[in-house]
Image (cartoon, rainbow, N blue to C red):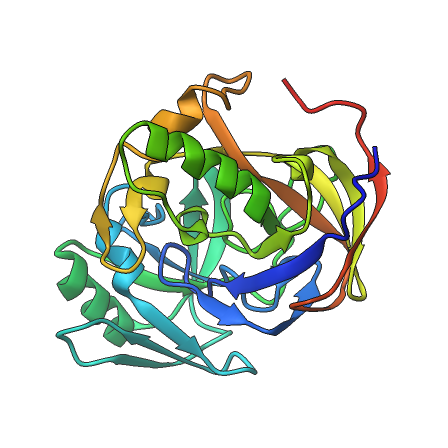
Length: 281
C-alpha cells in the first residue's frame, strides 16, 4: 500500500505531566522514550497509582511549563497560586503504577505534594521518571517510554478525525478537536481514514518509528481539554459504531516505538518504509 498524497506532520505536542494540559511544539527532539520530557512527571495517590482525567477531568486545566533542560517545572491552574518546583532527579524513590504496571518514580517533595493534595482534595504526590528508567514496552515493535499509558508516541491523522466528526455530527452532536485524543504527532495528507493503522515503519525528520499497536480509547476522550469538563458520550458513541477492536474497546490513533531518535518538525514529510497488508481486527 502506498497512498499517493504526501503525508506531512501538521502538529506536534508534548505532555510533560501525565494527564495535564499539553504544549504545542514546532520542533521536537525524540529520545527512545518519545518526545523529550513527554509524560516525564506524574501525579500519584497515596497508594502510588497514577491520577488520571478518567476520575479527575479537571487535570486538563493544569498547565505545565517545564524548562528546556528539565530543571524547573511550574504548574498553573486558574484561581490558585502557581506551583514552582526545582526538579530533583535524586529524590526518594517511590513504587508507582500505571494501569497496574509497576514502575518507579522520583518524589518531588512535600511542597508539591501539599499543592496537589489541596487541589485534588485527596493525598497526592508529584513524581518524575528516574534518569535510569528501564521500562520496556510491548507490541509489534517493542521500545521504552516514560509514564505514558504504554508506548512512546501516539499518532493521529486529520483524515481519520474528519470521518469521526462526520459520524458525530450525524448523531446530532458537535465535532470534537484532535486534542481530545492527546496525540504527540498529527498527520495530514493521507487520502484514506485510518491509514495510520497500516503504517509499520516510518521516517519523519531524522527520527524513525515502529508500529506498536492500535490505541484503545477511554473516557478521557469525552473531556473538554480546555475546560476540564466531561462532555460525553462523544466521541466514544460514534467510535463504538465502527471502530471496535478485539478486546471489546474502541480504537482511534496508533502507538509507536522510537526505533531511531532524532529531530522532528511541523511540516516534515512522512516516509513510510513498511506497510501492513491489512488493519488489525
